[in-house]
Image 1 (cartoon, rainbow, N blue to C red):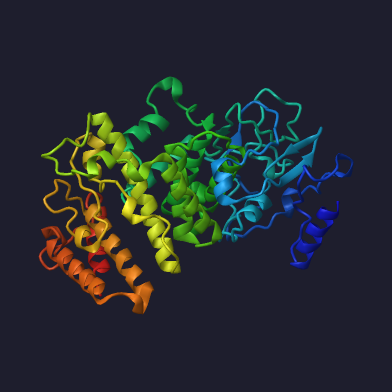
Image 2 (image 1 turned 180 degrees about the vertical axis):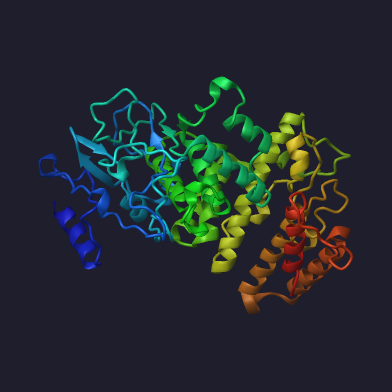
Length: 494
């Protein structure tokens, strides 16, 4: 109790209202001294008023639909909990014993996030495409609570029970039509610049054509799928114009999806045991990190990038092409055992380069050290989306780790994709930034090598990068390529 009083007094001194969330460590407080925290009603939440919106807020959070499980409070941080250094202290609710639940304040407090602009922006209550998953009397903090579909005894007080023995399943509360629209927008507007998903296989997995699966594909989703779909919707919502978003500013449309993705990420941190991370989970984290990087840079974004970097190392993605990098000339040894092997490796490569871009961007703009060791990367540069989606293998090349080797990485390579060339320009920028940070301690020879590498790289660019000789066309098929060409030329300006 003494620890609890000190904790609450410290919070009061900071001017923070702890009436909506009480965090207890059940391992240090005697059972007879535990009391339920004050409940928070729906009307107590802060909200951002949007002109033209209605009084009732339509919720787009996922609902967990797995069977109730018993919760074991052992030392179950797992890899993610260790990397994020989040203590095993969570909110508690007295409802037939101690049962943990995930409140809104837990998301904000545990990850030290800043409030997202428009986080509680209201969507018109008469929207036809969105579904309310619980009654108005149910607090929004319970919308993520796992419960059995057949269990009606706790309808008014659903509780969260966690278990590593059975994975939780999530239900999206947006309509299938709205989900499909937002996914379509993602692949038409965003995927070219964040190309981590194999489009044909993605649609085959999440939108099967069999009639028996129609309307059922998104009712029982594993954690990774729920994280991916919420991450996709958070990025694409601003570019969509369905009736459900009437009155909501474009910049605020993805905030609710991002918050739900963040709460699902919190579920993974709290419940993961000794299981190895998976590529789909990593991809979902990449989407969430890109959302925060493009909307509001904060402590959670920086910590998340560090976490997914270590996840990538744990999956061995940094050395996915270690057997190829030593002799990368396609005439010497084939780079794939089969088409399926090449398609899978390309997916791993794209995840790695997306993480590398996140690390490079966040570290450069914040003037902090890079988390990825560029000298140990054994990953080929990505090829074009067209070849990957069609299953047409193309040999590529690894990135050189020094200025004198990096600029010639794609020389004589069958891979001449515009994004691959942009990644080399970005890599040279990161090397130059290292020299700038070191300041006067840089040797003259290192500066000369850097200047020579940039000049040689500029001269070695393919013909389509010559802005004076090529009139760039921006349409649905060429927009991404034209963007990479312009971005590469901007990167080389000194």
